Image (cartoon, rainbow, N blue to C red; front, side, top):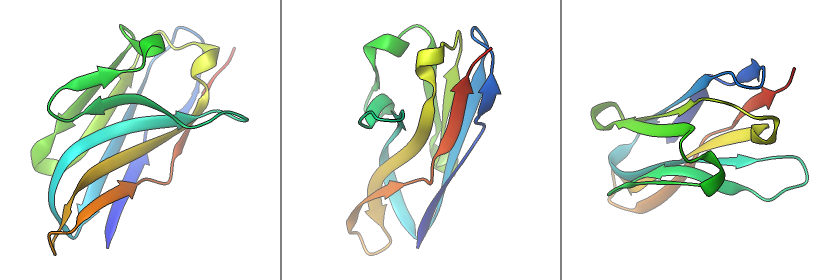
Length: 118
């Protein structure tokens, strides 16, 4: 079993900051990619930021969000600054790698709500 546990979501005013964390644990041999998706009500899930061989960002968050990883702890962070109401969504952590049976897997967290509102 593998679990991805997210934390750090909440309610913040426009212009504020939040830091999301996601820890992957369990029967993991290796993680080669981690990322954050978000899904707003009535919209499709979209990739916000990813960290594999490099980092990539959704255009609308470039310069405001920063993704980082602690490879030794299978942890990924998303520092979100200058938050806007349009950033309101459920944020999901995603990890791709090998389980202890060397089978490629795609793991998801349960999601954490981020609400940007005055």
